[in-house]
Picture 1 (cartoon, rainbow, N blue to C red):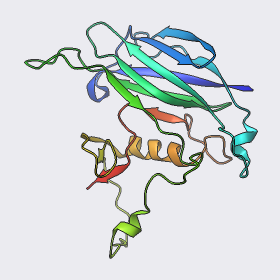
Picture 2 (picture 1 turned 180 degrees about the horizontal axis):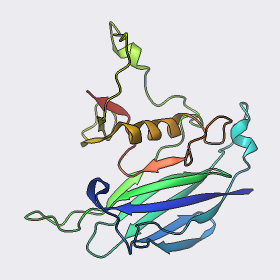
Picture 3 (picture 1 turned 30 degrees about the horizontal axis):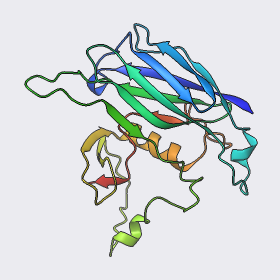
Picture 4 (picture 1 turned 60 degrees about the horizontal axis):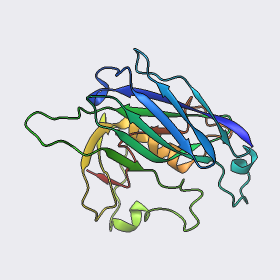
Length: 210
């Protein structure tokens, strides 16, 4: 058993400003809860958590889960409580959670329910294989552009293609960061992103809406 790290940063809507004073509680099976609070920059102290040996994620034949799983709850008076299930922490890596804190009472609207997000198992560890069909199989005549076009933002569907779920627009940079962390292990050689195990509230897309 080795250790990994978890870093939490809290922001108001669209990361317009940091939200200090957010109480973050991390729970894991067989481990005592750990509680930290975000400072004036919206950043909580780094939390060190146990994680399986790094060698597991480097072995192509490995069948054991190469990361530890945690539940993270964020609370602050005047804001909606956010709970994230299945947060993955790899050995020798820092997982980053960017929390978008929403007001508990929206003007003219009903009291919203606490938000809960269930992060699925990493795609490389899923025993049933990939989580979706390759895009080419859904497109009768794939179009290949001569020059790549990189968008500024992208709209994602927060659920499976046929599920009734909300669509949200996020920056393409954050979208790619989350997709990459779902398709490769942050421990692999050549993965240089500072927080390769990068999780962001609301961005676990399984379907892109163009």
